[in-house]
Image (cartoon, rainbow, N blue to C red; front, side, top):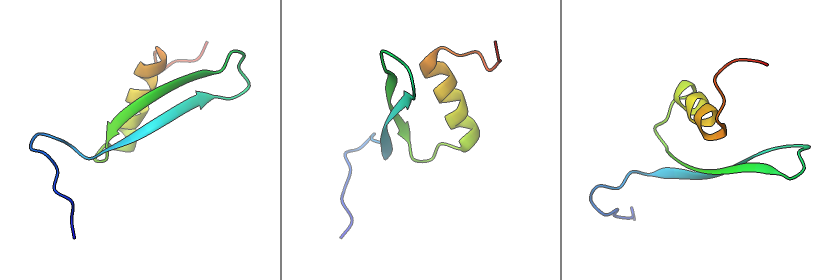
Length: 56
């Protein structure tokens, strides 16, 4: 049986993304809609870590 969701909610993934080999550990918790494309997910990660889509 399918679970009903309250009106106005969107199914989402609750993610914890961390950068390995950092001290202290650098991580972000993100809730992203399940409909996100890979290109959109890339932009979300860039924004969450304050990156500007470029290399040093």
